[in-house]
Amino acid sequence: MKSLFWMGCWSYLLIGLAHVVVGSLMPSLLEYYGRDYGDGGLLIFAQFSGFLVGVLLCPLLIARLGKLNGLLIATGMLCAAEFVYTLLPLWEWMYVVGAVAGFGFGMIEAVIGTIIIATFTERTAVAMSRLEVFFGLGALLMPLAAGAFIRLENWRYTFLLVSVLAFVLLFAWGKGRFGEFKETLQARSEKTAEKGNWLKPYQGTRGLLLVVFLVFFFVYVGTEMSFVNFLPSLLIEKLGIDKPTAAFSVTLFWVAMTFGRVFAGVVAERISYSRYVALGCLISFIVISLFAMSGGLALLFTLIVLFGLFMSGLFSIALVFANKLLPGTEETTPSLLIASGGVGGALLPLMMGESMDFGGADLSAWILSGFLALLVLLSATAVMIQRSRAYTSSTRSVNVESSN
Image 1: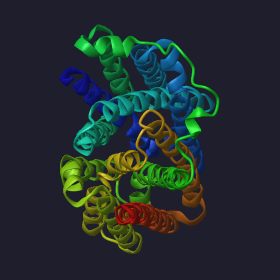
Image 2: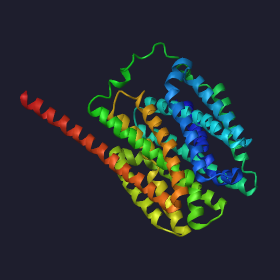
Image 3: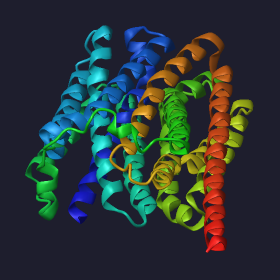
Image 4: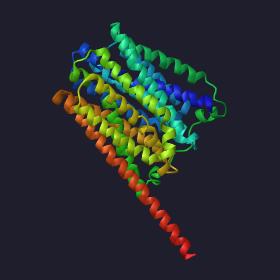
């Protein structure tokens, strides 16, 4: 189990790198190709469209090929796409490459996330949050590497770095020994689920909960990726700072995210998943609103750190929270929620790019604040449904006892 968990961690490190490499290099890419922020948003859209397809096709591919072969294919696609990025092809081809890269890390994330949630039935939040730490490490280290390559005026080789690391992981998955889990990873589905069967667990209140969490993940991932990919551009426009310093802001954000994720699972287990998610959304909304109305490098960097800390565990804890409220759906709920996040990650950065062109950094920052306000409402709705179900269940128990 340990070897499989660590391979999952290294895979999350890789997809953390891949998630933010384009955003870290966005100003340099747009300058090199002579494009505007709207085009940058389209590139992010292409990448997360590929991510969505990868997540949605994941169950079908692993049923036919097995989890291990699916991971090998996805990692190979990511490796190839990042290498082609390095060649700086025509801008129109960058959209295709972005879609292939997104497919790769989307499928990797879906497979690994499902394995961990299904395997670690106790202290699931701790396991997922520690897995997310490695995602954060990847997202943290990438802007540092990008800043270094930008200073050397060889920023394109940042893509090559990701490609090489993907190749190493591809080799490790191919040659790895996973003991009792080897057969599970290689197993293929012997039967196909009947049409519509996957919808049966989502009837009534459970269906409403699924919708709430689908929208939650749509907004959360879209907000996070919009912030990360356009943060350097936001700071350059708000403060007029240089590109390496702007790229460092993304690193600062991921330092806070990674640090917060180390403790997120433990905190969530102590105060409950529902309180963690609701409070995290509320405080993040307050912080991003202050970011929108503030100026000054030191103050904005402080707010970036706070935003990272309180956003750090929302994805993993909300994923566990949803699975605990929807027991028996561990094979479908994670993929559905990750896919919804992929849609948000594709569409909301597109809106963000257009808002940067139309109203600049100030308008875009307030749009981010609006996204967080919606997350507050959604988390409150999930908590109310949870409490309503608990009250109904306790009332039924009392009625049964009194009748006896």
